[in-house]
Amino acid sequence: MRYHVLACDYDDTLATLGQVDEHTVKTLERVSRSGRKLLLVTGRELDDLLTVFPHTDLFDLVVAENGGLLYDPGQRTREPLADAPPAELVERLRAQGATPLGVGAVVVATREPYDAQVHEAIRELGLELQVIRNKGAVMVLPPGVNKASGLAAALVRLQMSRHNVVAVGDAENDHAFLTAAECGAAVANAVPALRRQCDLPLDHDAGKGVEQLASLLLSGELDEVEVARHDVLVGHENEQGDEEVRLSPYRTGLVVAGPSGSGKSTATTALIERLVEDDYQCVVIDPEGDYAEFPDVAVLGEPDRPPSVEEVLRLLESPERSAVVNMIGLPLRDRPAFFTELLPRLTALRARLGHPHWVVVDEAHHLMPAELQEVPIKDVGEVGSMLMITVHPEALSPAALTLVDSVIAVGPEPGATLSAFAGALGRSAPDIEGDGDGIVLWRTAADTAQRVRIAPARQQRTRHRRKYAAGTMSKDKSFYFTGPEERLRLRARNLHTFVELAEGVDDGTWTHHLRQGDYSSWIRDKLGDDELADEVAAVERDEPDDSLRQVADLIEQRYTLPAEPTTYDPDHDD
Image (cartoon, rainbow, N blue to C red; front, side):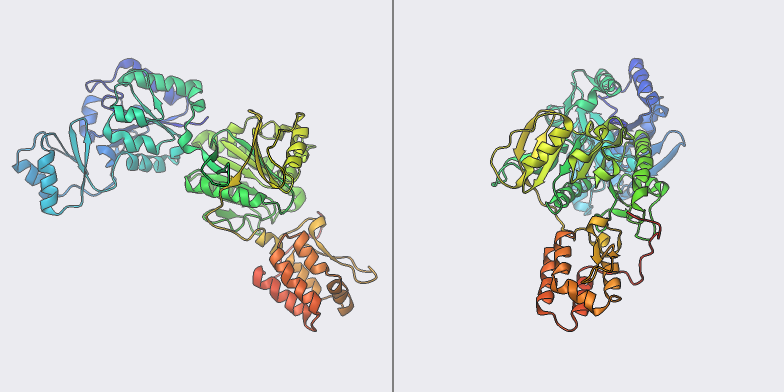
């Protein structure tokens, strides 16, 4: 499910004239029994709320004072979320006869027409405070304190994300609150501006409107309501960049496919970066260390220390943290089993807390190969959304293919890639406008294909750096020292072992491969690093006496090699 939290305003949303109808209370009980969390987010002072509403224990947390105070009904604890109001302001307003005048842990509240006195007092006392209005109410709070900030504090306590919240309100002070949630709903009696700007205008007033929202939530219909403002940017439809191409952040099964070196990593990195910047929690399943230097994301696993499922789950309990699960320390044969163990645990975490939001599976054809009859999930919504990266779409498990609704084909022949994918699906390939290389997005459900210019990532990373430096590359990508008579077959699984083996082979073997241009060809064709390949090719052409040292230095400058040799499993034959 998409929404794990229902957050409600009180006055004129849950309540009418300060009272909540018994049927509305029963509806809230049903929502709570469904396993979802309930939050009450109100501008009222807490003691005032407790006087008029005896059912606060229905709620997991109460945000009172328009974001200034967090109350736990179960523990009966109160936590001010900002500084107490300045005493001189309160004294001055009292002296001026402002009535009513409420003084809470953080808020000072009165009503119109005393807003003029409030502004004058703040200005003359030189206070850094903000004034928030709510249907005639006037609230004074520290800067940055509002219902949205209070909601954020409550979600931290619950270990939940704003992207799993549906919020409902009625008044001016609910704008930020509704915008902070994944879906913002407004009851029918809400102020016109709020109804115009919300994601879901409800058909009924106050409590009846909340009941309508709860019904949509419990039936699952709310999951299907489109909230376009959260769609993730893929790129632009034309060179001018004025036509955005976006995908839904929920229940999207996306494949990025294309040959090696075609730009899959670039497209994927850009998508992940934008998701993380918008507070979606992403888990990148990284079999070969391609994402070990991804910015602003925790990396679990090293060449000599594989990650554990438990440490992945512990990190992901905090929704603000995304993770790269680096399998480079696992033997190739053990990686699919690790993935098969991890994925159901991620679905269980999401069922409990609402995150992660995206699971990204690199080298998906290795982790979910065609021979695999079943995958650990039946619906992509179980993990929110899934992004699978593959060179060979036809090599994916048929069970994995059922999760896919969109394909991004990259490289010199995107039509061929889509044809391969369509063949695996048992359907016809889409028609593509124009010829030549580029990137094409195929939405399989709608059967529409369009050329896309990918919006670039904010930061660029060195592709595959740690894998190539110290990881375990597959047999077909490794370098083999054979010598002129092919008496040797020394396999370099990465750049570190390449340099190590090069320093140990005889001069004749080193020179044989140097003169054939084998070193630069390997770096260019298998590592995809044209810049380093050009530099090594220059050494190959010149054949200096210290060519080995020069090549080793070039590699070390570009790929920081480990101080000690990486330990490999001697029985591991990938």
